[in-house]
Length: 122
Image 1 (cartoon, rainbow, N blue to C red):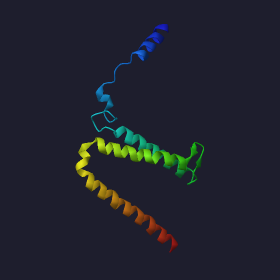
Image 2 (tube, one colour):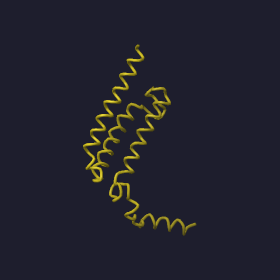
Image 3 (tube, one colour):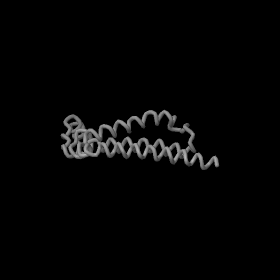
Image 4 (spheres, helix red, strand yellow):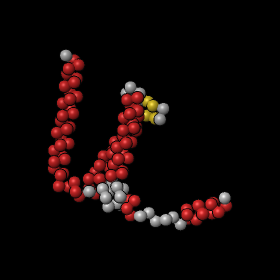
C-alpha cells in the first residue's frame, strides 16, 4: 500500500508529458483546435435550455437562476465559436457564405416566430 502511495505521489510530482496528439481538438492542438471547447460550451447552453423546458419556462431551478446561467453561458458559446472559426483556416474561405447563412437563418427564425404569433391571434 505504501509503495502505491509513493508511486502516486511521484507521478503527481513528475507528471508524464501529454503527447501533442492528445491536444487535438483542444486549444493548442493541430486538428480542429477549439472544437472540444465549442462542444463543451454548446452542451452547457443545452443544459440550461433543458432546465428551462423542464421547469415549464420558470427561470427558478434548484441549481440556480436559469436567466443568470444563460447570461453567463451564451457569451461563452459565442466566444468559443469565434475562436474556433479563427483557429481553423479551412473555414475562412467560407466566411461570406457562413455570414449569409446566419443572416438568412436569423430572418427565417424571426419570421417563424412572428408568423406563429399572428396565427395564434387569428
